[in-house]
Length: 302
Image (tube, rainbow, N blue to C red):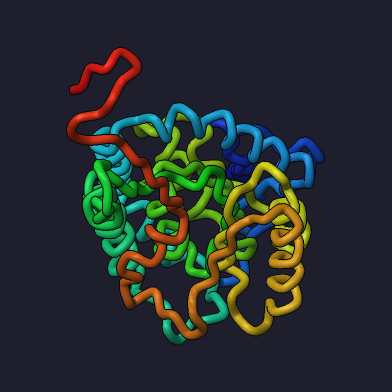
């Protein structure tokens, strides 16, 4: 008797848990040959709101972690991904071709690049204040310091590259202390939902990264208009064919004064982005502090 395999149904990743879509919807994804590969949760507007709520709840704890600790956690994700390297290579090999098939990375190169970028951003966590902060010259008995701080909740649309692009929108944001709600590529979501399993078993607190699957055209307008989202990364809709969707998201973000990041046209995943993504999701706070002798109410000084 021929055995019938059990088809896996991947779920969303919200608040460190794997819930089904509240709508109950799923959609099938295929492999490179066009054969059925798995069912994936089709996220809804309510799922977006739940994910933003989870990211907001996690923001306080994650942003107050020491930079050193954030670096350790991101490095741990790299370790976990390294341990499942063969599985991700196989997932990328089995995934259908994307819109940029000609320029797609070899699966082995892509997985190695994803791991390397996690290590890269892990190393940046305790250097952000030194690289982007400053001690400002002032004409008076004061110290003036400018220090970078996280923006808050970042809503992101991952590019079609199912792993390197996904890491590129997640890692720099959380390195700076932000939390993320990311919409994975609808046609090749399996590396993203498998990465969610890696995140769940690493030291990353629940809610710091939330992964939604489904149709970007349905999820992005809700994400862009959500008043509790502080920044948007529209890398996944930067291409010309998504022009209308991107413009609508930018207009919705303007209503809530949400920061928007869109990479320059033609940006290749083969080219490291430098510090652009790190700086895109940082705010700057300037503090003044008196120095030298100060007249106090009692006439004393310090």
